[in-house]
Image (cartoon, rainbow over all chains, first blue to last red; front, side, top):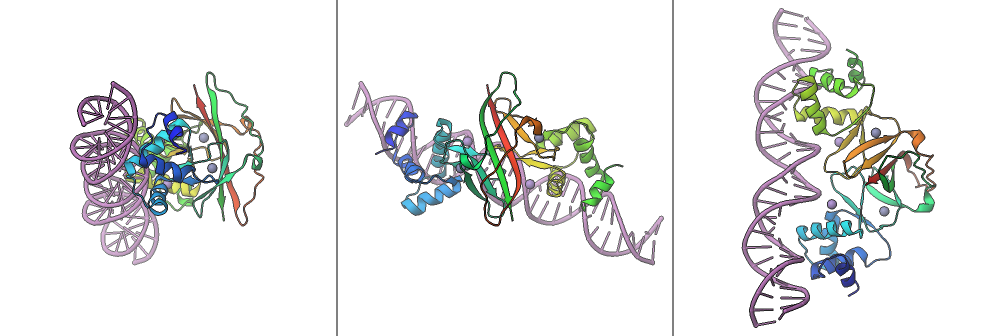
Amino acid sequence: MKYIEKLRNSGLRPTKQRLKICEVLFDTKKTFHFTINDLSKKIKNKMNTKVSLATIYNTINAFEKKGYLKQIPINSNQTYFDTNVTDHHHFYDLKDEKLIDLENTDVGPINIKKKINGKKIKSVEVLVKLEG
Amino acid sequence: MKYIEKLRNSGLRPTKQRLKICEVLFDTKKTFHFTINDLSKKIKNKMNTKVSLATIYNTINAFEKKGYLKQIPINSNQTYFDTNVTDHHHFYDLKDEKLIDLENTDVGPINIKKKINGKKIKSVEVLVKLEG
DNA sequence: TCCTAGTTTATAATGGTTCTAAATAGGTGT
DNA sequence: ACACCTATTTAGAACCATTATAAACTAGGA
Ligand SMILES: [Mn+2]
Ligand SMILES: [Mn+2]
Ligand SMILES: [Zn+2]
Ligand SMILES: [Zn+2]
């Protein structure tokens, strides 16, 4: 299995459940955005498997800590995750509550002029809210 | 009272509780960031008044809808609000969990090249995460 | 095969936010 | 001032995403 090494590298045992989660998350050309609830449904419907919410939360949190997933900063009652872990930005369609990727070529370079003593910039994320 | 008009203009009756909330939010030269819990404590400590959480939530949500407050998109279990409703961006200090304003002069112009059919850009917000 | 630590799971707990419904206060007309 | 109607406040319940718990199960090495 292609994900065993990926899981092992991040200190996670390759269990049946984690491999299913990996398939749903990474066995696709296109990256995507999801909530835990989205993911749970996808595993049930596309994989005909039931994985408990506790396991999904644990695994997703582990992946996020290891950098295999990113959280998207957005005001929502649910946390949004992104399988695209490259630096990129987002449109957020307020009506449809949908996230859309902005490729780096879609946004000009962002120049942060202010510095904070002893602090390093870890990430720069742009959220463009859309209406209409 | 200087906030009666402000409240009336936005369809809210100027009650004692709402006026207290206005004092804490707007009776200051500096703008600031807060959570509902922060605000509740501030009202208790600085104003020696108790306003119920339900009233605080209702009023803050009304102010946000009217544009007197902004929500800051950030991944946190609590919602962060901003009394600075001008267009501006933020540092987020991951260690201290503190928000810091970036003035518009601190960030170069942001050029969104991509367009979505029938959608209009409502806001562009940059979150710069700081570590160390 | 045995052993042990890691994992999964159902379920409970947590905590921020929203809802409810009864009591209170604001505002308008008299 | 009073009556009346509606908005508002409030304590507490409900809601719901997320995290914690602890018992059953599993992976993998000895
Ligand atoms: Mn997390
Ligand atoms: Mn809100
Ligand atoms: Zn994305
Ligand atoms: Zn701000």
